[in-house]
Image (cartoon, rainbow, N blue to C red; front, side, top):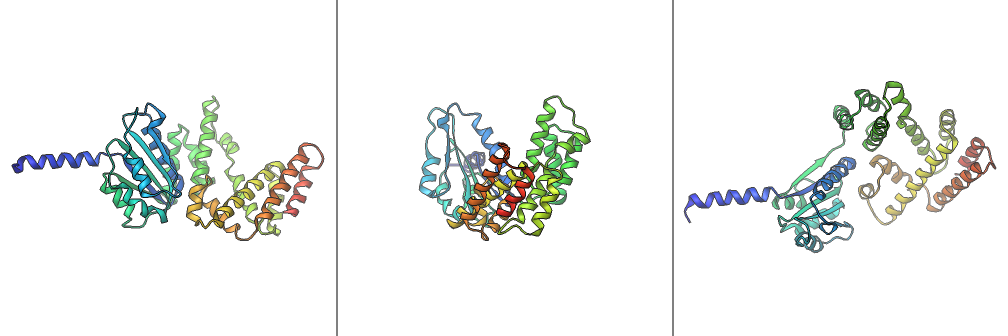
Amino acid sequence: MPPGRHRPAARSTLLRVASREILLLHGDEPFLVEDEARRTLARWRQGLTSEFGYESLDPSGLTPARLREAVLQVPFLDPYRVVAVRGITVRAAEGLAPGLSEVPESTRLLLTVAGRLPAGSKLARAVTAAGGRGQAYQRLRGRALGDWIRARTREYGLPPLVAAALGRAAGADLGVVDSELRKLAAYQAGGHPLDQRTVEELLVVNRQEEIFRLTDHLLPRPDAEAWRLLQDLLQREKPTTIAYALARHLATVLEVQAYRRRGLTLAEVQSRMRQHAYVVQKAYEASRTVDGDRLEAGLRAILAYEWEVKSGQIDPVLGLEVLLARL
């Protein structure tokens, strides 16, 4: 074949491969990874005509052969298939690379990893070789965090004063920031104006931080700082609100402890839980200092407290102080 005809055909093949929808997301900020995964899947699934075109694979125990089988499956009623594998551990990621030896143009593939892949990752190279791309997300700090908050605020159609308030209050917890923005957007959509005073009244991130500090001093036993924080919180929060926050903390530690006993690393546990990575990290550390029986007993004590308060059997404040002593 003459050289002039061969080269254009080669360029056409390269362009066609590069257009394939294969996306690998990983990094140190799980919220950004999952947020992009949700957006991508929502966009891809808009083109499907049935539920048969979408398949979500459980990363635990996934083999290259099973991944290859899902990737190579031919669309049935849809113009293409969407295959998603979310929450792959860094340790298991490399072993899945052979499953991407062939990715047809009729498959759109999304892979997310719970953590940052090392340089030269086999999975990342396999994605690139198949015509896809990878995106790594790092923790946002300083100016980058402020820019993200401002961009997210504009995306929700909220005034700039909201971004300023969240930048002061929410720290680097992107999950909390996004939750607060959605709440304020819903409030504004209901026809209510957002001024400085209203925004500060609606934001709960400052109070959540104080409650989180309290839970930090609960395990293995409540210390003197826990009692001081409790008294401060009782000046601004309902006792039952504090009790609910304590219950959530103990439940999180109990769940993390179960994962840890199964041999999962911190990064693997963070990928499986909805809470922010920092919250899971603190729970992971706390899970080493207390046994599961004490955690379950604490949850039962909180449940009993809430029932006794609602039935009028005890004073909410005094009952909460007794509850803290029992924890």
